[in-house]
Amino acid sequence: MNPLYLALELGAAAFFIIAGWLAFRRGRLPFLELVSAATFGLLLEEGDQLIFETYHYSPDFMLTIDRAPVVIGLTWAVIIAGAMRITDALGVRRRYAPVVDSVLAIMLDLAFDAVAIRMGLWTWRDIGPEMGWFGVPGGNFYAWLFVTFGFSLVTRRLRDAAHGRPGLEWLQLLVPIPAFAILLASIVPFAIVKPLVDSDPGGGLALFALTLAAFVVLGAWAIWGPDRIRPNGAGVAILDLRLTFLTRLAIHLFFLGALIATGIAVREPMLLVVALAMLGVEAPLSVLVHRRTRDWERATDPAGVRANVAGGEPAALP
Image 1 (cartoon, rainbow, N blue to C red):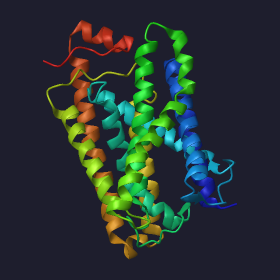
Image 2: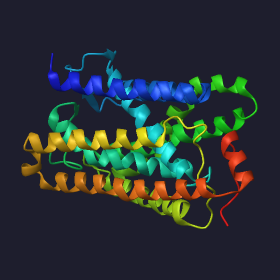
Image 3: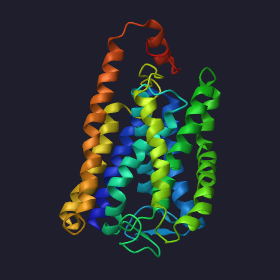
Image 4: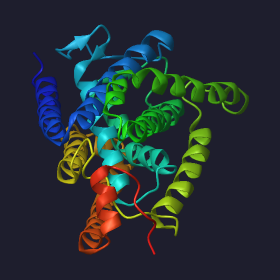
């Protein structure tokens, strides 16, 4: 029994159990969304390994479903749910929300994926540590964007459809299927274009960078542009804000600690720079979320309050 894996699996399970308890207290739909996010995480990990066979996980993971460690599915759930909560708290409109969710999720992967492979948590096949982004193929980062995008898009659509029709909430358990289909569809153009512009096994970073730039530009417009709504979502959120930021901080600190303790930071200082940069973004992000939610709480617009409680989209900001 590897103590590192034990700590990782117990820690992730603890966060997920707390998240599940708090989600259940808010209602059936938030709980179903969290469960379906974990199911989606396991489905995509199992499906990716069976279909593409580009990576495999360490045998030291204790609890697995076939090839997918359960802890990975639980971690996917809290990452996606946390991103959705932050986006709602920023007052992002529904039509832009999946894009912002995706950017918030990729911030974490950029900080830890290259560290995780050096810890032996998972291994990319036929890709050396000097290829791609320090051993991580560009296609992985590209896929991360659409993993979050697909789940968020379908979940948010169903959330709106189930408003006033609670019987539809059970359909949330089926969301992993269309979300995975969206991921597969998004990979098609990448798979077609990549061999034409970058044939290296770990390549595709330029395509990822272009895609990320488009997401960031649209996400910035959604967060800071005039087409915003009052921050909402507390009544239907999967996670609350405190647990959301605590979870993100725990992920950052776990891999940052491993980066330093294992000496990776000395051998690959750029990974330390990126990890610290991604961690550094969390503070102003938290301040921005706090400021917007505080301003909303001070507002006296009854229509906005009713819309937030009901789970609908409140009126635009003046």
